[in-house]
Image (tube, rainbow over all chains, first blue to last red; front, side, top):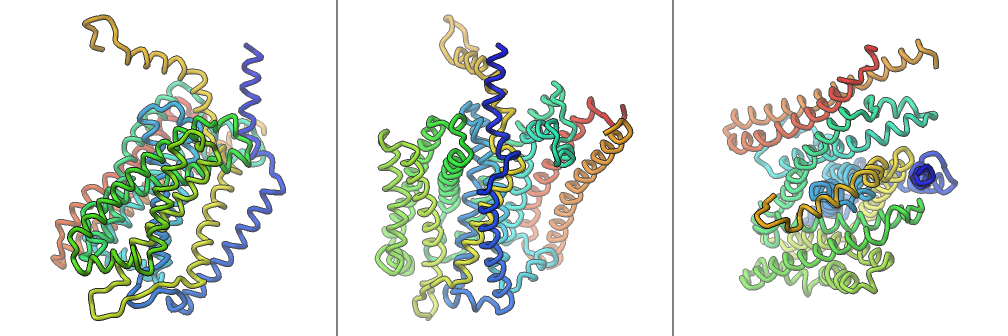
Length: 447
Length: 86
């Protein structure tokens, strides 16, 4: 028994190691990322100084990379809270090493995505106008409200399940003891505290699902509430939500594989976790294709001239490479890789996940640009070429994401230690009882 | 850290935690005031106030519930574990 306990403690040390041991790789990574971010910041200051003329945006394409990335990053944010909440709610026991990684993605990516509309403003100070002269009946302000609500909810939903682990770090002592003491809220692991925490997490996980769904539905309204060909569609709400969950799962898989490799977490993130998540990815790929097919078939069958201009621009015009690239990345590759067990290895899943993230970014590009490039007014068909400023800010945003994740893992365990312990101590018995309760009992028993 | 120092440290930490909870309520109250201000503008301008009121009916309670959950956890943790008073 003693030996068994010792082995368990030794195994979990792997989760504390990144916090207490800092290698050369950490400083190099942070240094490189900071340089990228500083360059992006310089390019942004330059944009504020010279105006939006330094971007590739012009008439008629007045939305470019910034809005594409806004929709893309907010979509990725569905990785976390939504997937974590659904797995918790459905009592999927395999969720335990995954949930925190997913929740961290949400918090970081939402902050990045939420800043993009401000970057898109030539005069960022004008964002203050929403406080004094905002119009709550505008879908743009619905976005501000729902993203703020989602960011608040997902931060709370990330923080509360971290409290027992923060208390563990506090009890270990060290230079940052005061920091962990502040964040642990006096957690001592008493029965009463556990009851309070579980109740709060239960309320939050139910609450967070409709908030997450509403966020991406509202983002789709920015497009679908306009009478613009290619945008004015009733299925945009669920289509965006499906795409968001799809890209979120792919991003989560990439992060899991990276941390498994760099932090040596093979003992926690096992092939079975990747197989279960990749099955979800496959289902979302099929669902995404169904929505995409419905969306375009309806447009083509109606053959409304302006709608056809946009569709042909995407399918056979200048955006054909992006459109068909999107179909290959989001449907053909993941379906082929994830349908066959022999391809469903860690490498195969990583490949499929990367193509899905690229494919979903292309999807956002295909939604935003072609509708604007084909105006119904007497203007010539437009074309959009992103400038160095836009590329820099895009790469800078990705660097902020990686840096945020690296810094988080430096201060907090990236896998929920107390949930792993709870799984070992209580869940095996609980699952056994649950499975027994599903099975038919003696005749006449209904409960 | 001796007894006195620990007591002082705990008190400072507790005050900082109370300040962070207060900040959450200030944030939530700020959002509620902002939304109410937008409703008042839309009523003054007769600019679809119904839509603004509809959004606010959903948004304001969401923020207050989140602040309420955090406060519930904070109070719940300290209720039977108040090491400041002991």
